[in-house]
Length: 474
Image (cartoon, rainbow, N blue to C red; front, side, top):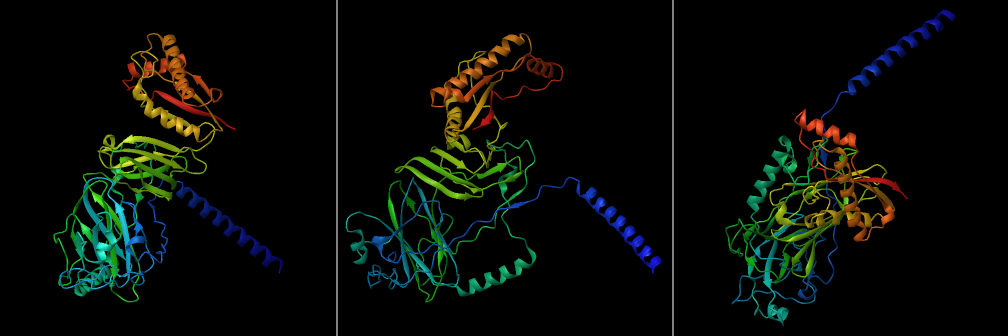
């Protein structure tokens, strides 16, 4: 018995050693550098409850141009008033409202109207009409058919096309991966700061609209005699108000999502926020305001959990971007879209609110060989003023830089310090407490190393003009 126990213990020890060796091999192999893992960003979907009175024109739901509304609950009934009803003189209207909902919007700029409607159930028979608000007695005129729609899409369902599409989708899902690769990752965006390797960003597959109005459509109108999905866009002008009445003829139907856009020669860069320390994209509480259109300021993005996506910017408009996230410094940017017209990616670096965080600033300008700030620096520095206002517990150091060949290191050292003091003065002048800011310049050794790299190694000078270094968090 004793020999059996000894043999058993020996076997256990041998297997234990083998297991340890296997684990060490596994750990060794796992230490190899892996390719960046793709980051799939899935949208957060919540159903929107349609107000009980949204079946009537006077209670139309306001839409934000460029922002999706929905998915909604199913429209139910025609409301208190049957506003739309076809007659002999006006056959190209709803025969009557079955299960309707009214929407309204104001065009923020000139362009071509696009309407995209995503049905929860493609077999539902959704129709829509578009009316231009002509002012007084508008809804009464609609009821009496004195006010006619400017766009009509009341086509019948093309059952054969839907069936063919369903079969193709079912067959394709077996062999194909979903689309949606974010195309902006290879672009050279102005805000792109990719000194370190970033993971691949993969956007979710975009759903296809079921019916609507598009600039590339051919039909100007779809009546009951037609089958089809999209009608051609109509031109709209800044400040004009329009109403959309959407009706589902199918009983016991389902809801929908609707999006209104004004098509112009705009650009839609991919907007992302990246934590370089954790090497991952993060969601932020994001607000982007468009300034200069109807009503002064218009929020084009207002999302507490923005996970990355394309944002439409119109040429010549001014924009304000504000992003925040717990544990990170907020980002505040003011810009004119014309400066970003060639960018397909706007990548913002999220810096953690911790001691030692460094902000490198390039777009700061001084007079030639001097320390006087030039006016073109104001926009960049005001972005950081806004950031430090939102973090009053932070103290920081301003460090100035110069480009030097080492001819007079002492003079260059003093110049770099004077530049830092000029930036500090700008912050104090714009409301940042003086006691929160210290200043420093380059040391003579730093200047000599820079000169040596430029002269002996042929390296280019750094284009960093100022660094803001977090020194403490109260």
